[in-house]
Length: 199
Image (cartoon, rainbow, N blue to C red):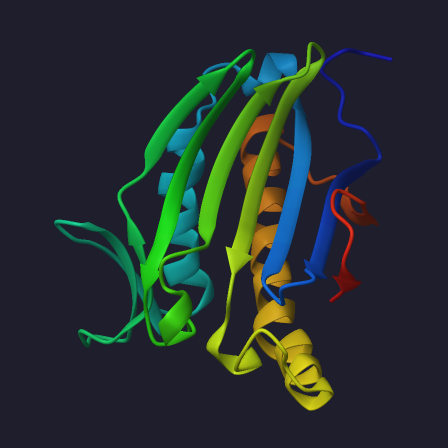
């Protein structure tokens, strides 16, 4: 097989779970062949993701850079749905990451604004670059507390969790096709990274 040829399917691995403390963990990743991934960076992922959020939501959600970080604002208002601190860069082995810590927003439980993060990671696997988006320790307002009722769990699962998964999968598929070219069929594969209640 030609090294630069696209596989018949582009696999995007995904897991979304509710942890024991009722925080949300969600991760999606795909691997871009080495030759096509030259120069890819966590900064590239973050920049493209913020632009994609605006495009995907038809500008209903507008990522805005602030003095303190980034806010996902509702339309042309100052109402922040989720607020993040500025990105923190880490380099370890062959992995580079940019992490935005959640620090507030309408969609976050008020007493849990000190926790949660959204990370963009690029890792050299030796045969390609693994592009990962990871949301961890997020406490959505819709769950209400650390002991959400079943209706609240179902409501979150079929609204915010579903939307986040769709956005992330489509974003990674778009990035893959932009880098590698072509139009390989996307196949979403369930992964197990952490134990918890599947969303």
